[in-house]
Image (cartoon, rainbow, N blue to C red):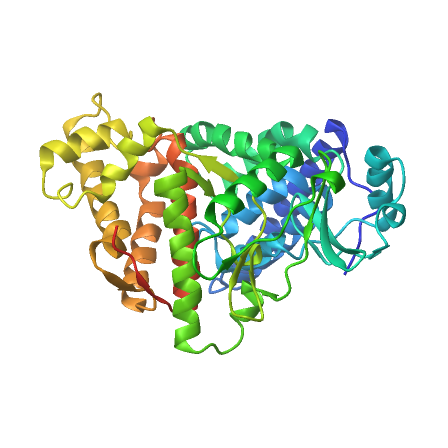
Length: 430
């Protein structure tokens, strides 16, 4: 795998990279329309593949917030063509890593010595690399460790990166600028937290301690004495990532066991801790040789205030769909509809969100839910695709939703998708 020996860290250098990427995308469009002129039946598949390749390569060099956005977008099956989903999903755990001298430089900044002087042994090459940092394997005595090192300049560039990625996101993926501006502030807050490994260490130790009694869940032990604001050290969890395990045949009882452990983990966080591991993608879960679910990477955690919890989880109230007065009040509190909406807007958005609430809440309305149900997911993805194409959403002058719900919705969407990939049957009663 290609390694990078530097990352553009100044705003000028990073802006230049975005501009050159935009130029490549423009050239791809010119090529596409030129060939389409000669062959009117030509599809956009090659255009999407070319653009996905160019965007991913550029973001891989930049790392940080822009690459993280690509990773997040890859999880939305309704928003991006398949070529983008496949390419951008690589940012979860197999992005091109940094070269070893940059790793040494980070260690010397925080420990005053290289990693070989801190640990008994340390791999020169990254074991895996994602959007914000990469992991190396180390030994200290008989302890096998995972050492995560943050890419240089990531924290300083989050705000400017998100500003520069905006034109690409709005133009290529036809996002509503009002909603983008509303929700990107929440994205920025979570990303800035992800660059603080001191905060991640604290949350990792706290949340793993509070959830360790959940059946079939395991966590690594964390080591504050070998961690800094940009380096995080923990036990190495033996096993394979969930993404690798899903490529192989699993017995149904194993699928149900892992799926139930994951459901119970998120259910406990949502409703008891009100602090949620909000980055549920297959690269963040390790399946141990004992077929237990290992939880890693508490970088992205969404804390839920009591006031918002009381509003948001009314969506699971069995009466909400049939009680128009209660539903209308809740929809206004969540900004699905506004008091200033005209009657046609109010009717339209109320109808769409009623259908969406029914769909997303369906797993909670039975004692056991079969996430292998293709008919349910076809209906869910089809409706999501339909919403993404509705001009009423694209042209709305108001954001439909509240920013506090962004990462909760994303967490549930990621959880549903993983459970569907597992084909697991889950006891879901709320």
